[in-house]
Image (cartoon, rainbow, N blue to C red):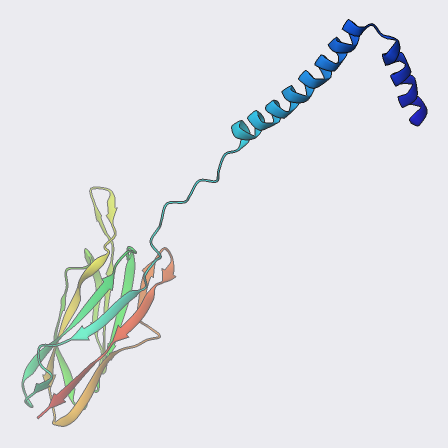
Length: 195
């Protein structure tokens, strides 16, 4: 390698002055063109990753049982309302199974709420009520509800006195479905005193 460099230097020294200047100018020009080209390429080729738009994190749906009365007289009727809140996920279908103690309570009526468009099931058993709701089809368009609403109202008759009796959701059978998944989170039960 040293021999090759010596040979090139010897040949360079033999060149005329104008030829030497031309070769040095070509080398310096090539160097600057390479540096400028590399800087330009980096500026043109660099494309920052797009910043994703903020998306809301899916919030689980919550359900609760509410009543205007915390305590009722024996023989009186009162209503327990099933409420749902699904802030940012549409609810395609849901099953609500409400349990109660038949020694103290008896179902008088079950009525549909305003959250779902269709309520295919309203079934009363000795110690439970099942209400099913689903999305509605209007003009060949599926209307999937979300937000807050009332699923239904159960009117109970108080049968016997007790300090408190629980009206609760069956956690294994109550399902709120969105995108094929159960999105049910918080559940609020109800305690009623009977005099």
